[in-house]
Length: 136
Picture 1 (cartoon, rainbow, N blue to C red):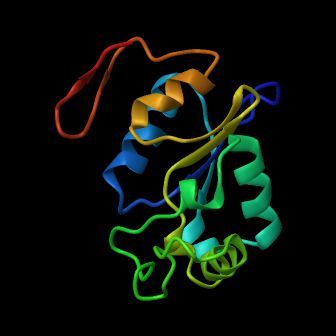
Picture 2: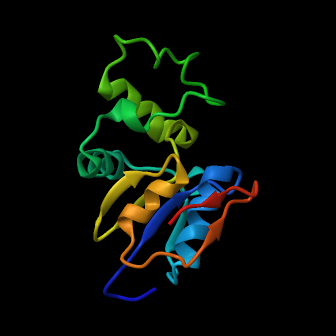
């Protein structure tokens, strides 16, 4: 990783989109800081900073598929940002992935190709794990 272009990816190695995003970053010549957030966990301040940097809302980074979001009542439109943030700190899997932070911005990279907007260099070519060729 070059000091002039630091990259952090909040990564879940069990997620194909997250693995493809990390591989795209590496194929572009970067060595990102990889944070396995399910193991590392989150602080409320980290989440608030990420949400502010994306310009979105707490709900924009909430993952519902394969998480306890619904049983915790977080998919209810009446669920407050406070309740969602508290649940994300308690259950890190509730945060969608991968989230990538570079000097060019912060994004939830779903689909994985969104990471290309955050990189100074792009890979010469890239093929996802499922064989899909990414148009660069």
